[in-house]
Length: 265
Ligand code: KIV
Ligand code: NA
Image 1 (cartoon, rainbow, N blue to C red):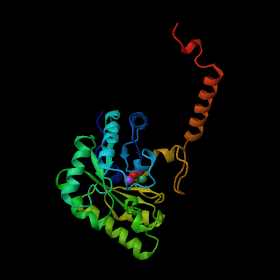
Image 2: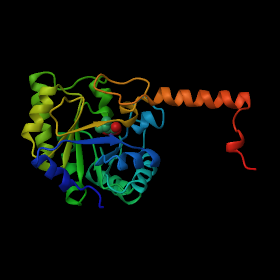
Image 3: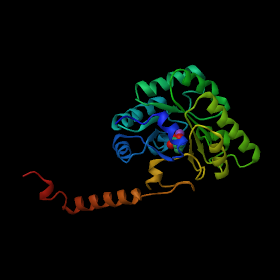
């Protein structure tokens, strides 16, 4: 009856057990995923798109992320809650990273934070880890760098690019991360980095051999209008919600809702 810890995730890798992670941004869905036994919930900066309607993760701020993180923390009992450090909240250096992470933990109730990048964020990772903050790394397609990457495309296709990703992953591990997200890389790169790291890897478009898998929940549940090749939809919530809204509208117009059963005598 306690929350999942980073030690639990390390032990799972030792035992060769895979685990799922989902994003969450609000209380009702976070509670459902917690009850479903999802051990790790990520308050992703993908909130920029799925909550706030921006077309990239660049605009979302720390002040935007904190209330979402607090909602997910309050609504869950068992999941480890990880919050994304948004663009501009850690790039300035270790001190800025510490201040931002502290807010996600103190005001948002997160137990861990995630940031994007390898070699270029090692000083930040070391400072956070020294301060007792569990850090999740994130390499491969790093959406906060979309303007440098030139679009949302598969990373690590060439031998050199794959080597650079492996080197970033190992540096992050040495700096003390408890896990690394691998986004949009060839399956063989996902497998090789997973084999070479002691800490768990979490794949999203990284093939079947990473230690864990993560999806944005609205993609996983068929609520998002467009999804990448790596997404599998396990429900069709967009259609169900549209049908529900249409039925409600029709009954209101027809005067059949509310009926006696939904009225007070
Ligand atoms: O913001 C996000 O949703 C993420 C995951 C896709 C890993 O960073
Ligand atoms: Na993110």
